[in-house]
Image 1: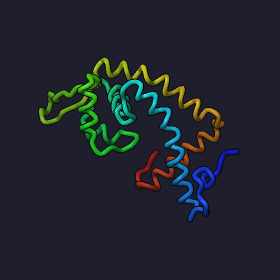
Image 2: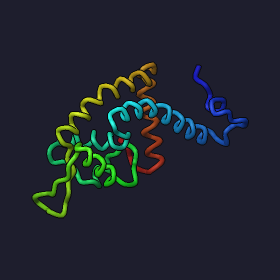
Image 3: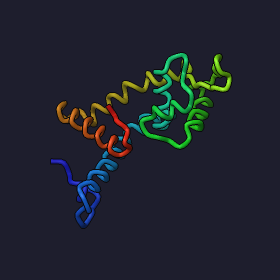
Image 4: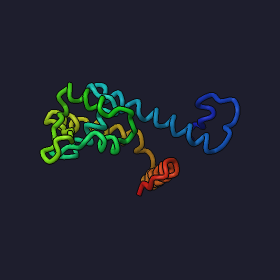
Length: 161
């Protein structure tokens, strides 16, 4: 049987509400899941946000994306996408290109090395996700995905479907 969060964090009194407990449980769970992912990415010299940018750009194709659109696609919002891109560019994993149609627009493109690294990291990450969540029955995973989407929609008012 799963441990109750109240005991896990050694909280002496009950939570003020089920919403508070759910929120804190979600944070605790996300942190626990992210630890192994973070270690895997650090071995490759990347942070989670850097990998997320690289993954987005590897899938964006030869046209790449402007920084603003990269920011909109990130799984977890970061305050400074430009700085993330700067670090990836310094590592030779992405490059900036001016648009031929509008020279004011700068697009970011994954380099061949960036795409190779994103592809190389993906199987290990998938394995970690399967180890961490694979014990949940498929039906429960589908329910969890739906519940989390509903929580995001409620949190920011943006439909997730």
